[in-house]
Length: 411
Image 1 (cartoon, rainbow, N blue to C red):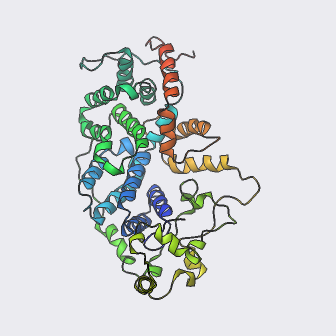
Image 2 (image 1 turned 120 degrees about the vertical axis):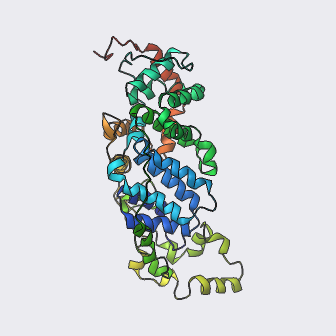
Image 3 (image 1 turned 180 degrees about the horizontal axis):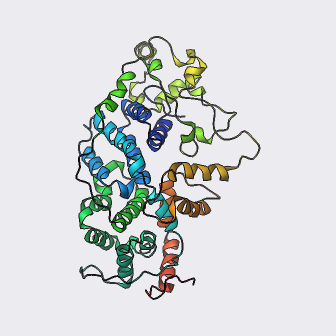
């Protein structure tokens, strides 16, 4: 049974709507969905969603945001709603100028066999470089060859991560703070950290180092009137506060409704299974009644005028409705999934990947043709943390001629 929010949206759809609203740079909707999640006691999930929105849509082009995000987490659990809203609105604000899908593109292209020489730029002695593999890694970074840097180091990260992170910090001393945060995200993110974030942080660290991007010292703010947007609905009663519907484009793959067909509906959440959905809810579960007397008081308190099964269909459709998969005998999930990847991870240029987001996603589509992963980051972790893949990559590296005299092995 689905979990629903304070104002009876599905929790997974609210989180998907936050990320899609940021991608589409819609301030009003971003504020609405973030506020809905915060009012529903979903602060941890909101922070994870914002972290992923930054990683997939900005990463090395907006490193300052991660510092501010880290500072916000230091205040948990007393983080103010305004602080979280500002983090989300900053992403909306910079979507056009700093939007960057380098991380997903790099992780896609990083799977491919190496087909390029590393070149021979001078390497200054740092005391860190002890092997030919590490030397090739450094040379790729110095030349700004982001994909090559990942490809020639991917077999080392499981055993030499400390050394590789130290190299990244040494090469880009101006960005040491951000690279340190990426290296140690597991520690400062605490309960928000998931193992599948590991390779996202590695890719972002490599891209940030190869890109030569530097931190801005200019104070970054959002217009105060944007934070005032929430006053349009925050004091409205439940039914009238439900202003927006989750974008249909955000449902497939990211939500449970995204797995339903167009002849199926989720309206039973409100019409038949309300209390079961409330019991699964982060907000509602602690408030649920256990006796008839408590139940009467519960409905008088939280649904004083009418209950959801008395709402009109249009009112219910703001949070519930039909699925998105065509109700035909054999819907083409391959096409739907391909379009979904493009929509979520190819929406802006990859500023530090010459081949672009489309090329990286094309590689991942080959891997995920038969069975799409539960999430993008889990699919990436499944590939990059596989011992068999590391053995294959090690063999590729051993056979790779990194001589700077050769430009392309295929020539």
